[in-house]
Image 1 (cartoon, rainbow, N blue to C red):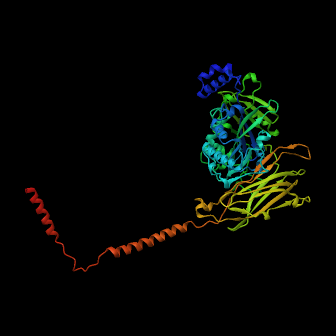
Image 2: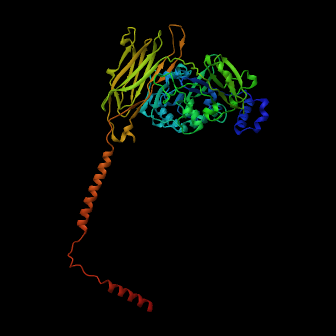
Image 3: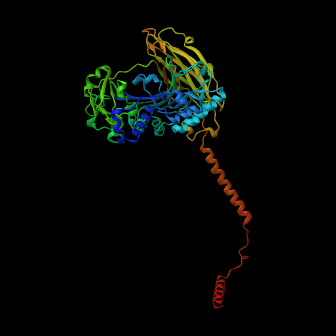
Length: 612
């Protein structure tokens, strides 16, 4: 990577970040024979979704030589995270912050095949290098404690009761030799109750080379991100080796996926507090048989609302990040912003207005890409479309739902529904659940029921099963199963469990709310289809988290007992103390006190003292 000669005269009048970037590139040019520079890419994908929703996917990726990383010669890789990985001997790290629920019935398949999404709250797993399990657990604890301080999260609460060792679900995505794989230990932990907020976004942005000051990261604002219907932040660090050059790089990939409600975002633009629409703004559905002039039944999604990036995010993109802009001698510039549109909507793409100059690259018939220029604001806007045109929707490979069954405070059950919409091919999945120690399942009740038109035996659905029982207050339950979901069928997994009674000190302050149970993880390994011969990429699906109600004592009773006991103690102590100290005498035995005589004597002594 070399500096830009044609722009070097502009750097002195730029921001301190631009001056620092210029000096960095100059040093890399001078010492180019000994130091290999890192590469940085960023991209924003905008995908309209059914129901007046917009999917915005931010991707930030950087590569660097692993030799420089091991020598702590950090360039674009964040030093704060790199030193943590080196100290804890972590070879591969995956961290997820998620909030909300992805509606697969309405929005279709998740972006990136769900590989960048996690369960509700915080989820992390890593491959740690160690000689034995005890050393791996110690380094895993140190890793969580360090990440907790770096991202302002409660990762330090991931202890042995919230840690599992998956056997079939996760595979390393980095490149390792056979010798290195033998010393790697996989550990996984989650905090489903962890609230994700702005204090987690700020450290995320500080890991980027441009720190959210330029490039597509300038759109990331906490008020807009956490107002989305669904949002997920992910960080992935892994080694990548080239078989041709026999060199290895360290890669860090940061991703943010958010689903914006266009209607709600536009309403918050006019007023921070959402208000109902006026009657003249409503479009009534007159096709209903019960429609009349007196009542209005509003039509949902009757028009495609006009929107722009500045309307949805509250700001424009303040130019491209200097480190993500390729020099002219490197060839074609990589696009930074891409907008997906269905084929029927291509005619309306003429209404797309560019608020700033940008280079358009039509990579696909339904895809328009743009290259950001340095220090040039960028904004795009779409006009109103009526009638609306449904955007393209990618069918998910599998639909999954999970819920509690049963009633009472002693026993319960879990029901998971897996539906394969493909009419021809079956799907092999790996089902993983991490349960708290106070939720004790009965393994003999674990069953699979198939609802399908074809004759499929229930014994053929469960291929393999791994069960690691819980130990009270030491570790949770790990349940992992390899399944086959037949085509065009539904597989229902059920099992019963028993609820444990906790000590009163183990209940949280909001004990009556319940206890959060982590999401189930469904992994679909990469496989080939039998019908068209195409390859199915590896896919990951997270179900929603569950809220478990345990037998909870009435914590108001100790308060009542304390008040009642204190009242009795006060009455008893006061009565006994009064009887022991007070002396009872008759009225005539009390000596009368002559107050007038005392006053005369006091005045006489005062006069005598003055005369002397």
